[in-house]
Image (cartoon, rainbow, N blue to C red; front, top):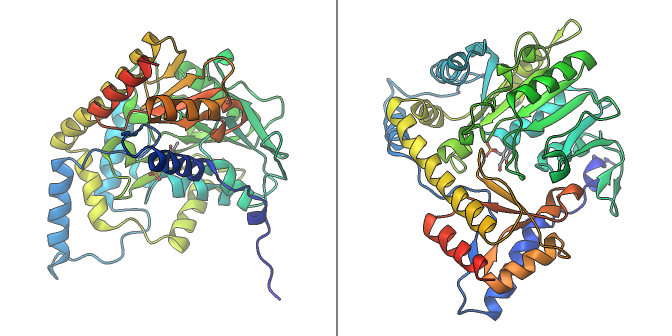
Length: 404
Ligand SMILES: Cc1ncc(COP(=O)(O)O)c(C=O)c1O
């Protein structure tokens, strides 16, 4: 009789978004005349920009002609895309990353879930709390996290680094030394980030302790402040301790198109073993590459027209972020994030926990957000609103909240 990977049985149900959907469905059924505004989702709403659409059409036509048809993509991604990423995202920012250190993929969720395969099951992970759930769940599946405690909502073998208003949402170095450190800046869900100088301290820490930082920079395009690093490789020594994961989902609206990439520097070595070689081997064995059409679409993101159009798109979302931030502040809420990220993280009013505030907002303002406790125990007492809705809906939602 076969046996299953028991680790999957250890995963607690992910009730967050299904509970939200059920509550919203019940509310709309009971109140069909009320229009509900959804500021809970982390998905984009604006269409792909013309430069990207044009590149996709062209690539589709190439697939219809035997002379230009493409079959399997190169394991690590097409050179035209890797070259432009290395130039635009790295070398222009002073990071010495070369195109053969870039691995094109179908997105940051898969890469951030799969990267743990390179490490021993004995490795101990550290995550910020609250956190994007993929980092922990993928390690649970691999058998790295111990047992789950329903009461504390914590895994016995995970190092949690609380990020709260008390520490400015900046994780402190843990007491116990981790092997793998997951960092995500700008952060989902808190919408906050760290300075380049602070990130440098993490890089120094990882190099000193012999840890690897898995750095998720999916929201890099939303950075507005000069002191915030767009890439961890802006920090000295990051090439010997950090893997960086990027996405085209939030900077270019590719959530349905699917494209991302991961940087594994050649200098990142575990003794005499190269993690770059290991990840290349994994790509070659288990991954078929992102489709040619999508890689051409990704290339267009870096064209002059693409850059200009996407700058505008990101600015639209950030205008929403400002509306939410200013509106909530005017209404007396304590508000964080929204400056370098499309997420606003607010403190729930006194005596209301995250779910109580969810119900209150839905019933009284007909606005949907996400309870902070769904992202980890330190998210209790906080609430996330996203800037990915339309401008009109965002303004209307804030008008309603201000009247409460
Ligand atoms: C922190 C973070 N990383 C990764 C992702 C997923 O990105 P992708 O669409 O490229 O899989 C998300 C999506 O919400 C995210 O918030």
